[in-house]
Image (tube, rainbow, N blue to C red; front, side, top):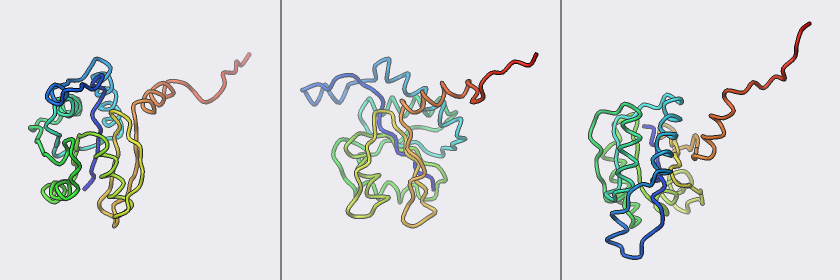
Length: 175
């Protein structure tokens, strides 16, 4: 299985009221981040068999935008282990449930996502791996322990897209 861990895109400023904060949706920049990251995943030929999200609006919107852009036609599933409260045992249950799939996209929040990523690749002690908003990490479960193949954030994706059109060779004229 290839697991793609994604942190939700930009949803603006946090609200003090937890009920209102849970209903916070993506802002325009967040929607742009979703489209950019989905194009990046498409360029990397990422194949998704199932999309799982936190129940909070900002994660669900991120999952839906990215899934739609990738051509995923299934339903986005909800799992509480991707919510705000870290629950590594629940996350392991999620992995076991979808272990027979080739590509799983899981969208959630920090600090859970970087904690899960750190524990997957570094064991019980974990590792401190920063995941900016809308970052995506690919973890390959074919090796033991699971191996982090890449981690891309929107800043890196923008730079890659900007450099693709440019030639690395200087222009020379032949006369």
